[in-house]
Image 1 (tube, rainbow, N blue to C red):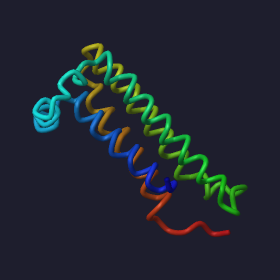
Image 2: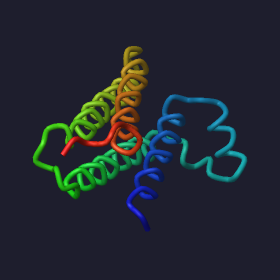
Image 3: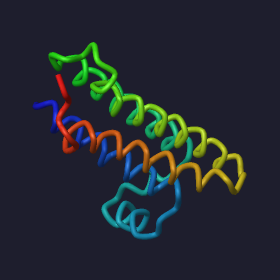
Image 4: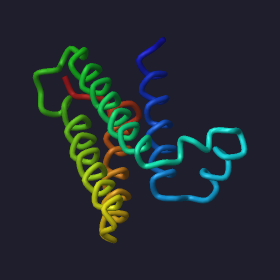
Length: 129
């Protein structure tokens, strides 16, 4: 399996898991309709969300180090942006599960940074080596 395919699949999984955690009716209805309604519990979603973000960050870090210019800060910028976004979204998810209203906003901000970091790694401007 190619590196990009793994990276994209973890991004899709993270987005679906976040949508379930945020309670988006379209995603929850689709999962229930195809018989995966048991996945819509916080005891399953929170570890799955953390695991997918962690796996995605590991793949992003690995792909950054495989480039010939891995010693530069510019090569690691997408990873740093995605790591900060992943941390913010996990923190927001934990706040949201606790019932604090600010958590949902932090999830959206964190996921935006997370996806932007992944976008810059694969579709952004090439690294100057």
